Image 1 (cartoon, rainbow, N blue to C red):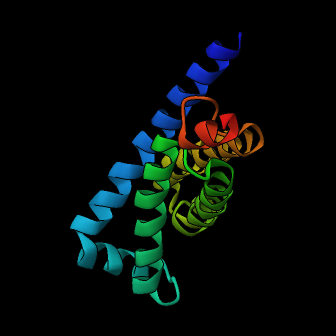
Image 2 (tube, rainbow, N blue to C red; image 1 turned 180 degrees about the horizontal axis):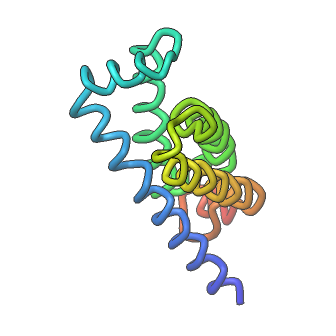
Length: 136
């Protein structure tokens, strides 16, 4: 049963990273445009917010993939995702024709946060750097 759990944990980490890594890389590749978008959201210091977003999404994803400091990274990414949900998917502030999509994205992010919290609780599992450290 434990190998089953470890395998599912690895697949879960990879799937979560599959959402955040491309998002972070696309922000990096379109830095100026994304900074402008962040400014349009009313974020204070949008360039700094963008650098933080890229770092969390790219470095956090890599850490999840290899299973390094998974519990801490999961908490950081949960907090980041919560902040991004309120800043970027505020469905209560958009026109009616955009509300449904924004609401779906907001609640999708809440589900992702739930996944991060489970990951923070359970750790990376055996198939990870963290798991190798625990075995030694």
